[in-house]
Image: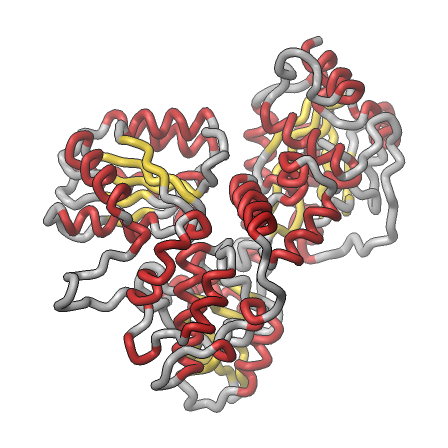
Length: 561
């Protein structure tokens, strides 16, 4: 009844009424996205298109789900799969009554359940959020769905790690049971195994080559063929253009050891070609790392990279010394890991054991936890990065593991989040188990007074930018923070050769456009911060800013965010 009341209040009053809406936060967020997308809550009216149901994903998933139907004949459950755009590829119901129910839901081949079209629903919301979801009864945005519950999860290809579709179980509201989530997750795992088995020998060799690549942590690694691109987390952040890079690989001579990576302003990569019968079938790229700050001597003494400002340094050292732990919170690219490493160095400690949740996709969560437990049992400090990448269940498991593991070695965790982002309950539990202070690392746009010091650290004196280039760097808002600045300066240094960096050595997006007025700079800073707090979700950012999505897109283009 509370959910129905919340749904009615949201539809008729929005969030202007007294008191908070009694509904799960992830449902409220999805409702907001649905409203901003213009979804009609009263009518079903889902679009239909003629699609090919015989995709590689469907060929792998159908046998898995068809095998499960034998056990579901009397269960009252319906099954469905969609492509990555939320379009139904296959659906099943055990009897005529439930098949009529699927007719009522339009859960048939070709109908689209993308959240922007169908509102909050199992399939669309799972694909939107990238994780398993349960949408029950009135939690659906569209009223015609209110008699049903849906449990769905996205399917990520085991080779490319890209979403290829979703698996869904639908039932009457009264038949909802927590075990359905476990069932869906199990089906997804079996579908992924089928996808891997169905992958060609060449694709599996690409994956093996990727996993066998011995690269230092933080090195961007990409393995690709004509139709497959596999990247680690560092390479994924670069948003590589698969088609352009493959074209460049095909241009490489057999003895080439380096290539320039298209779209990265002159950045180069070590190249290893994969050849079969004298034909290039794939390649492994190790992108050259962003230069580390060189040691300095004389004068005012060693320069400290401004990601670890004096205030941050003191707060971090104090928390590590007193509590044995600390949490660094800030947007991606602000230098949290660098600050943590330097805190360990200042304390005379050995190099930390670095654990990143992104590694879970390569190994398993159990193996990752075993590595964490072993690290906490040693004398080495631990750097636990990007805890926000942990799922709710994973975060709670890690919190329990840390709570029962005693260690004298310090632990620093990092959380990629904007300063206005609320702390989810599961991360709050994990933070409590750490026991250290939460320390804010400011985005670069809020400490542009440190930009010139950063430039001196990241570029040697011979290539220091000329004043006109420095002015262009100071006018940019740096949504990618210090990491973006380091990439820009590294590429510009290569373009400049032995001389100083000039404006024409900088990326085009820094050299075009006019200087913003102080009011525009303030507005751009607010928009950038909200975009960071919503992790790039423009629909949610528009909602928080109180503007329409087209207006937000226009401002992003105008301010080059």
